Image 1 (cartoon, rainbow, N blue to C red):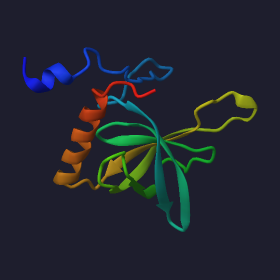
Image 2 (image 1 turned 90 degrees about the horizontal axis):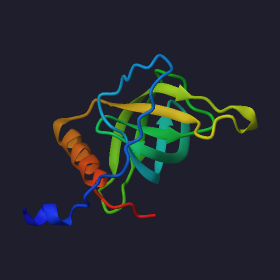
Image 3 (image 1 turned 90 degrees about the vertical axis):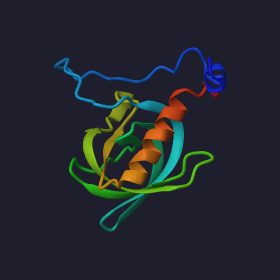
Image 4 (image 1 turned 180 degrees about the vertical axis):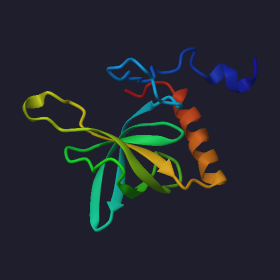
Length: 138
């Protein structure tokens, strides 16, 4: 057993996977819960502040009661704890709309990263691998 292996918890945190109603999983990358990381994003003349609830190597889920339409391009700025900030371009891939009456407790939008250069992609993959094996901080 290497030194790094003994420090890892025996079980990674549960990875959230939601299967669409048709039963077909479409995701290529697992999403890792991150609590609530702050994120600033801009689409056109719209500047917003919200929270990232989970991340994968290729995208994030952003909490929003007023998500942007699918296909919207946006710039994202977020800094995971202890890491250098990310400044990325994304596109809204899907929306979980807000519904009155508390029927939807997790409104927001799935944002796919686009225009990733190789060093940034590598940083994201390393970040996701790292947080996937950290013990639950709650």
